[in-house]
Every structure is written in structure tokens, then in C-alpha cells.
Amino acid sequence: MDHRSDDLRFLWDHVYLSLLPVVFGLIISLPLGYLARRYRWTYPPIISITGLLYTIPSIALFVVIPPVFGLSPLDPKQVPIALTIYSVALLTRVVADGLSSVSEETLLAATAMGYGRLRRLFGVELPIAAPVIAAGLRVATVSNVSLVAVAGTIGMDNLGRLFDIGKQLSTPVPYYPPIVLGIVLCVALALVFDAAIVVGNRLLTPWRRAVAR
Image (cartoon, rainbow, N blue to C red; front, side, top):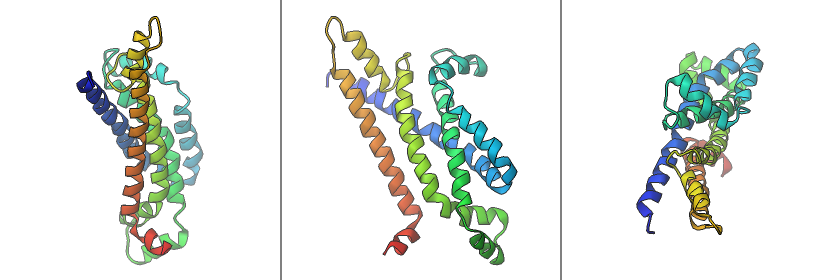
């Protein structure tokens, strides 16, 4: 409670640093996933290349990104850039597989009703693929909440700073309050984000509730 203002600032920084990459990653993944779905021969290279992005260690990205993008070593912009790369790695396959789950009969019916390619994508394919995409968004968002904390250990403001502070104060005996607080807030934030995506998916797919009844 003595450092409530700092804790709230760390929490807010953690929120937007976790969410922005998911938004940017989805914007990038949608055309990539559609391309992989539309032209089958592009599926293996697109999915393989984007999947390999997730194998890059986060610490390595924080070292490489500043000189590539002309940022200072502690510029907070490198965090959303790095996490956007990871989000693209997670979401591209999800988008492609979600769009592939739409049956050919449904696509033919939409075309017969006069839907053009773009209208069919946004009016038919994406709504049907929404549950699959939402599942990928849940994984990407929760992963980002965890990965953002890594940036806190190298001096960037977010909940990860609490772990660093706890480590610095653990002399000569362990000092757990900031570490426990950081863990609790990260878990709570991940649960809130996950619940928000579940609720959003239910609101965007009301027909699924009707079928369930």
C-alpha cells in the first residue's frame, strides 16, 4: 500500500504492453492466414516461417530490435514489437485453420447468394472461424502477460519490475512481498483477459448459443 501509485503504474504499463501486440499480431495474421487458406501451396511455408518466430528467445529479440529499428536499449517500444512477432507466430496458424474449418458447402451457398470474396470473408468465413481464432487469442494474450514481465527485469516499467525489486531487496534474507504481488497481479490480469475474450467470443457468435439450446 505504501507504493500503490507505482504498483498501479506498473499494472497499467503491463496491460497495454500485453494487449497492443495481440491487436497488431491479429491484424498481420489475418491476411497471412487468409493467404494460406486461399492458396494451399502457400500454407506450408507461411506456417513454418511464422512458427519458427516463436523459437527466438525473448532476450535475444530485446538485443536485436533496438539497432534494427533505431531505438534506445531501454525504449519501451521494443516490447510491443517483440511480442507482436510472437503473436504473429501463434495466430497465423490459428487464423488459417479457423478459415479452413468453414465447409465448402457454406462457401458455395454464400457465393450463390451473391456474396463477393471480401463480403464472404467478413460476413461468413470470419464469423464461423471466430471460436477457433478466439482460442488462439486466449493463448497469445496469456503468453504475452508472462513475456512482458521479462522486460521488467531489464528495467522497463511493468509488473516484472516487482520481481526485480524483490530480488534487489532480498539481502541478506529473501524479501517476498513485491514478488508475490507481481505474481498475483500477473495471474489476475491473465484471468481477466482470458475471461474478456471468452465473453467477446460469445457475444460475436450468438448462433452457437442457439444451437446449444
